[in-house]
Image (tube, rainbow, N blue to C red; front, side, top):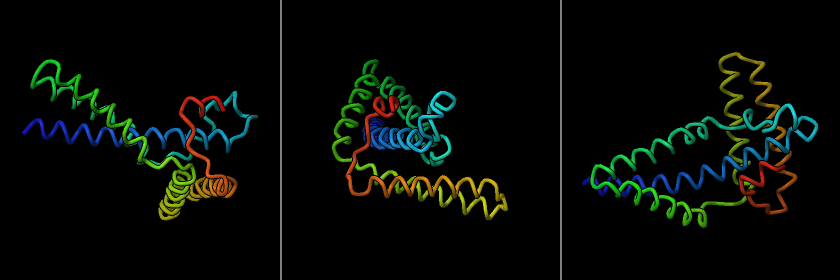
Length: 164
């Protein structure tokens, strides 16, 4: 029974890691593109924090917990099973990288949708300053979507996104 649980966790962690890494690279790339080069010294990640959806933050917390759970459950079975399971997770991630969408527009549309939802939530709470900020960020992301729409640009690797 525990092997089935480990197998399921390995699959979930591998696929989720791939999607999260692409999403993280997109938010970093878009945050830097939106802030411009004049603020690079003061804001090395640009507007990444402002445009990152809450779900992305949750995934960034869940993934290390999944890896730790896989190591612990595997090690309960045999001393090396946890390590083998993590290696299997990395293998699944490599396979998932081939199937998870790599189109930049795919992720930017989700960011814009999350910012629209954030704006609506703030308006419902009558927090107009935050609602206006979310609206402004959503507009900037939508402009970026329009710019890259016809290019078919792919999500840059995280290291490349850091160097922008």
